[in-house]
Image (tube, rainbow, N blue to C red; front, side, top):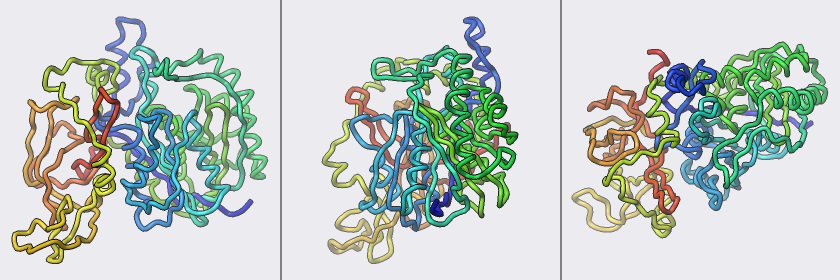
Length: 475
C-alpha cells in the first residue's frame, strides 16, 4: 500500500445544544419521551449542511494545494445543484479544483475519504448534516447538526495501514422525496443482524489487511448504526478500545455523514504517536479504515473544543421551530420573499461567497468592490487588489437588536463592523448567546444563509459577524 496520509481533521458544531432531559419532560404527556440523556446540537435558522461543512473545512483551505474537493451530505438543500462549487468559492480555492458531491448513505464521507487515500494529490472532504425527523420520533433527538472535514495528502500525521469495505442494501434507516422525514426500523433487529453480518466482519477484514490484532487498537471512531451497538461490535471483534463516536453522539447527537470524521478527530486528538485508530462507518454497507498516528494533525484540538462549547437550552418549542418540526405563522412581515438573480450570482457570486473586498492604490479597503474607489479623492477607475475579509479580525462599531424586521429566531441583530484592515461594513450578526452584542466586541466571520425563498426553494449565502469566543457548556 502506498503511503497516503490524513494531514488534518476538524469538526464544527452549532452553538445551541438542546437538553434531551428537558425535551423528555416536554414529551412526557405523550409517552414518547424516549432517552433523556445528553445534548443535541441544533443548527441556527441560518445554518445548513453547506455552512456547517464550510466552517469545518476552513482550517485546511489557506495556502493549500488542494486539487479535489468533495462535499458529503444526506440532507443537502439542493438535489439539482451541486454544493461543492459553493465551498470552492467560499474558500476562494482555485476554480480549476475538481469538485463533486457524494450522498445517499451515512458513510458517503468516509467512502470519499478512502477513495482519496487510495488516489493521488491533495484532497479535501467536507461533510455537513442537518437531518429532518418528525417531532416525537426518537430520531428527532438522536440526530445532531454539525460538520466535519478531512485533508488528505502524501504527508501528514495519520497513515492509512489497512482498510476493508462491504456493500449491502440493508435498510435500517431511510428518507425519500415522498417521505423526507427519516424513518427508522426496529433497533433490536438492526443491532442483531447488522452488527453480525456487516459491521463486525468488515472491521475484522480491515484489521487483517493492516496486519494488526484487535488489542493494538488504542481508539475507535465507529459510527454506531443504533445507540449502544458498540458493545456488541467490540465483543464480536475483540476490540477493547473506547469508541469516541459514542461520546460524540451523547454530547451532540448523530451527525450522519459527518459523524465518523468528527469522531476520528476526537480519537486522534487523544491518541499518541504510534497508536492505531480504527475509523468505521455504516450506511448501505460498511467502510473500515485503520490508521497509525505518525505525528501531529491540524484541526483535531479545535474539534474537541467545539464539543465542549455551546449554550444549553430547555426551550422545546424553540427547538421545534429551528428544526422546522413546527411551522409558525410569523405574520405579514414574514411574507416578503427575496428572489436571487442568477445573473447577479454569475457576476459577483465568487466575491460574495468568498467575502473578497478590494484595496485601492491609497491602501483603503472596501466591500463590495467598485470600478471607482469610494475614497473622496478618487479621480477615476482603478483596479482594486483582492482582500479576503472572511479571515480578517474585526470589532463591532454599532449594534441594533431589531424585533420588527422578520427573522425565524428573533431578534434580528445587525450593525457596523470595523475590520483591522480598514474596511467598515454594515452586516448581520449571528450566534447570540443570550448576552447580546456590544460596541467594541471582537467578532469573527461565519458563513451563513443570507436569505431563503421558500416559494422557489432557493437560498443564498453570505458572511455574518459572530462572537470571537464561544462559551463552554455549563458556563
